[in-house]
Every structure is written in C-alpha cells, then in structure tokens.
Image (cartoon, rainbow, N blue to C red; front, side, top):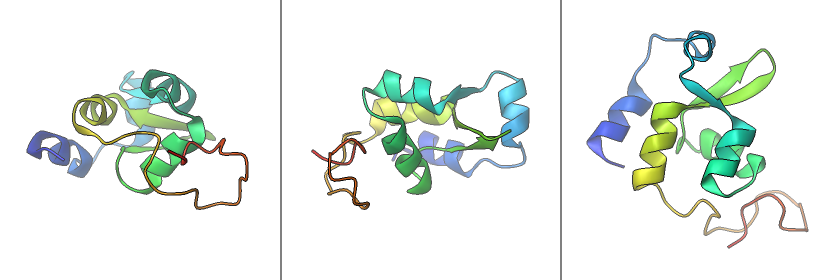
Length: 96
C-alpha cells in the first residue's frame, strides 16, 4: 500500500454518515461493479482493511478515496486465498 493510501486508511474524525452525506462514499454493490467482483468480496476487503468502509443506516459503503487507491495499488480483487466460508459455489468472490 502506498503512503498516500495508508494516510487515507488512517484518516479519522469523520463518520461514515458524514462522508455519505457529502457524497464521499460508494455503495458496496456499486463498488463491486467497479472492481468486477461481488459485494461479498468488497465486504471481506473492508473487514481485512484493504478498503475503508462502514455501515450507515443499515447499508454498507466504501469511501471513494480508498476505492480509488485500491484500484491503483490494490491486489487482485478475486482473492488468492480460498473462501473462508462454506459457500460451496464460489459466489463469494474469494475464489481465484
């Protein structure tokens, strides 16, 4: 991760609700389309700290700046590891 991306991930003080209100977030479903993966993979990337995101009003969002950094510097969104759940069908986005 680049220094610029690291700074974005570590920036604090602004809530997800404030970022959403200012148009600084992307819904998880849209982020998945932009990266060519599934919404479940996006949620896993948030959990793993690869993307900065959170929940607002029951819906998950990714910050635009972390999505942009991930697109420029991130790894393969399909994942190199096997699925951590028992999806069985490979629909989680975690299968290479």
